[in-house]
Length: 337
Image (cartoon, rainbow, N blue to C red; front, side, top):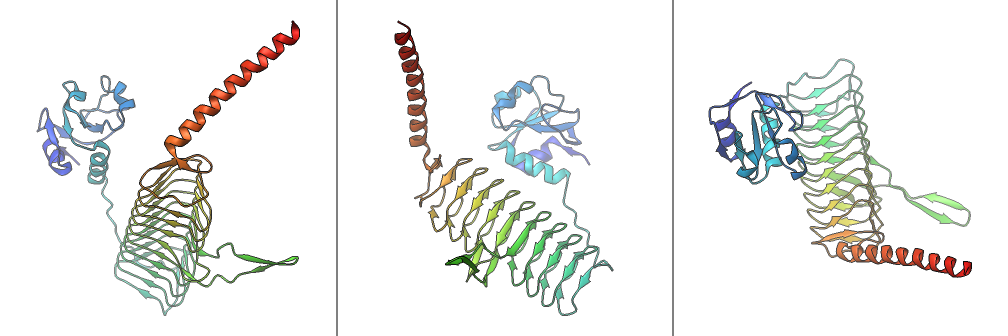
């Protein structure tokens, strides 16, 4: 597969710098660049590799970074590179039909061009729309509905009565629709609260490997359109997550929390039950959200507060620690005298 540099520039809506007829045969990392390939400079920390990279062309945001090399200038090099990768490595779905070792209930409704691999179990009343891939050993519970062009990878478990939209990706061993953690204490007993609700997953959602999304106690747990969830994330019952959110690894969101549109939550952050995080919030890694946040800014620390305030507190703590050490030294010296 070969493309001229001018064709790539048109595809990513960028401007050519250098030879427009340069042939590009692949993609490589800037630090491990290979002749004939194109790479990108998205993070300025990698600018040190520009002089020695063997890549034939570089996608950059500033023509001056090329230093005479061939390349393409765009506003967002990382976004452009994602498009280039999709061009060189297209997702060419080839339906394989239903494997003879899959168990598919006769009352299910399977669309056109669907793949169901060996060991998958599709229960009664399930609907799977056109061009969806169901990997080996996937379990889909009764009356669940899955949209078109989805990829449900190996060993995923989807419980009964779940709704999944179109173009959803669910990676291996994720669990959708298991019981939320609901118990009520009565004297010395813990009575389990029946979890009778469902999970609604919108279009273009991605859910990482080994992540878990609990079904609602009553009503719905909601993951809205375009939200991307990393590996090892737990989302509790009745949580509502808005559109376009980014949630990274090992985040835990407790029951009935509401996350606004286009929020980003860093790794290992936690959110307590029944709070609301306003749209456009950025929650720094390892932060703890213990109360509702207005949104539109970055928060950090435990409890999470506006990041500037958190930095001031960290600086004060550091200064106090230094003062304490100096004071201890003075006390030691005075005792010796």
